[in-house]
Image (tube, rainbow, N blue to C red; front, side):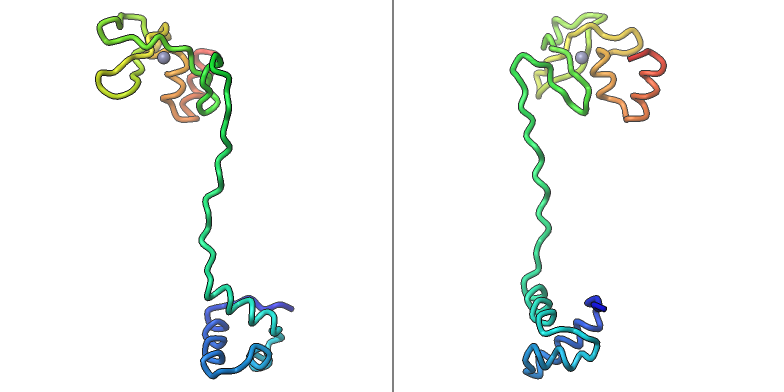
Length: 136
Ligand SMILES: [Zn+2]
């Protein structure tokens, strides 16, 4: 059976190492079936902790004329209108920094935003409720 490296076993390993024992003598002194290679591996891992690297995110390529997919919601091709050109019935989803541009697509009857921007602004549960109420 392979024993796990607990805090107490690490402490014992460090004590034996400080006494100047070789890996094979440390393994024998552990008296729990630890092998020489396990001692060498543990000393190496304690001296060289491996930081967890973040998993790389896949890069999604899309054709320039395809609508942007964000969180599996297909965004409309926005008109990008200024506030002066924004009228009732147009999506008021803002883009960028001041001076803002707005989506300008036809807003849904129940919202100030187009259907896709309404869905984008909702939580996953809210999206389900919205789609049950207004259809998908
Ligand atoms: Zn919109």
